Amino acid sequence: MKEGIHPKYIDATITCACGAVYKTRTTVGDMTVEICSNCHPFFTGKQKLIDTAGRVEKFHRKYKRGTKVETEVTETTA
Picture 1 (cartoon, rainbow, N blue to C red):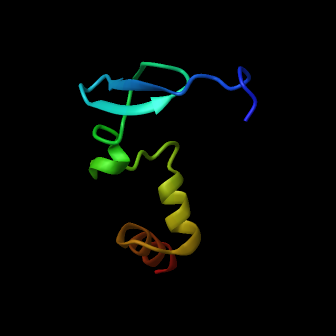
Picture 2 (picture 1 turned 135 degrees about the vertical axis):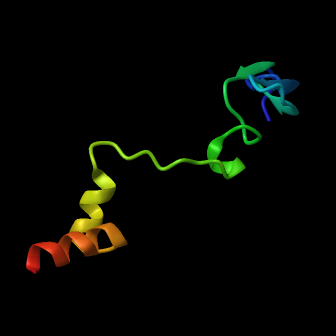
């Protein structure tokens, strides 16, 4: 490797807003992040399905899935 062209690879501490602290190595240095794997809803299992503008119902109507859609279909055909 050539001398003097590569950045310094130093120890760093990454701190999350939830209080989690990670030790790693980076060329940037210490960092502060807003969300990490300890508090992210996908990794914690607390993820909520947010229905914006009835997209879930639209999907169920399109593919005729779910109990609510089946009752709507039977009511309109009867």
